[in-house]
Length: 520
Image 1 (spheres, rainbow, N blue to C red):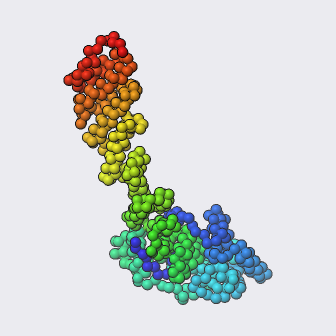
Image 2: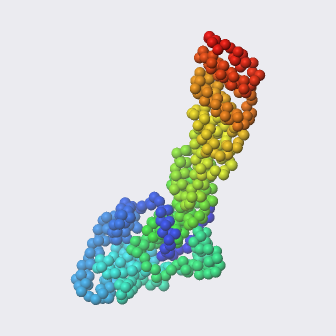
Image 3: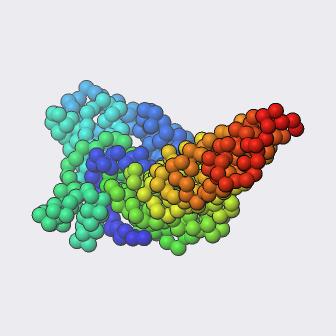
């Protein structure tokens, strides 16, 4: 499996329609705390508690810290209100907010600093400081826009009027600038996911394509600003080689603010976690399916199917664990990105489930699985062979379970290849012959008559390997049943029918010579 080699940008987002749609690929978010789960789920329900969302990135934060933060913000608002902020012109309001907030909260700049650090120690970066300003401006109903550059975030107050920039840090310092290797890897990632074409790369070059996909001065929402904190946390954990925590952070960043760049880093962190694991636990399988779920377009489609085949071999065929294998199947099926992948996985599952049962002589359950597999891949020659084998085994049984005539019709209807299969025709002749004999031997003459009629119909189409002598003998068995019923008329009727197939059958001739009023 290919592993990504990402370099890091603190704020590396490009929103796209494809990424937005793929938000649905994030499943089973792993929350770091009950606090985080509560407020992220509330956000989904439309309840945006800004302070709580900003604090939630730290797993140790609880309602207590939220209360402290609210108190600190209220003290700020009290100080601003005492300065009669709302009586001042807008420009002076913004300046007063900027200076007061900076003086009270922003003490030390660091590249990666979450909002809870602003509240606790005054440590901040462009994301957390911008978030602070946004919360305050919203409190005073001052319009604003959060602006994002490839490596920086800042805020503009009164964007439709005076456009006052609130810049808390130096955007030129302290940021990693993507080098040529990173740009090349990222453009190749976009190509693999069919997000850019080879022609576009040839025409514009790697530099041109890269620059175009990192648009500067783009407006983002408060929710997307919250996502940037998770993104920065993911970067930090990745650099520390804490790939599990990095994946969880990138997962939430992508969920809140879907982008190709975050997806790229998320899959990289997942790939690092998969090194050396043997997929004997469900959480390991989910790492793999999460990796595939986040791939753009139909990238890794073949690898996706092949990995499922490997797990089928390991957990169904080599050391059967049906319950665990079914969970694996569900995880892969829910991950399938398109109808082709879905059908490939479903075919493998149903084919091998049927194969296992066929090998254990469980032919009826095997056929149920094979029938489903056939709906996903009717062109499979290996499946055709298995279906024929199982159906022949079912029909060759001495006593067929169920309605033989209806079953044969269903076989032909479901599997068109039986309609021109001479072996199937011969097997059906023999099956109806056995059913005829069994019915008349049991003196179930109504069933015997029905089975014999079906046999005669097939025989008229094509005699196959069925002989005239065999047809005669079946009619003689019918005669014997009517004899036990003391019905001379029934005996003579079937004797005459039998002679039509086997005119030299002496025993049938003998029956026809019996007097009509013979007594038994």
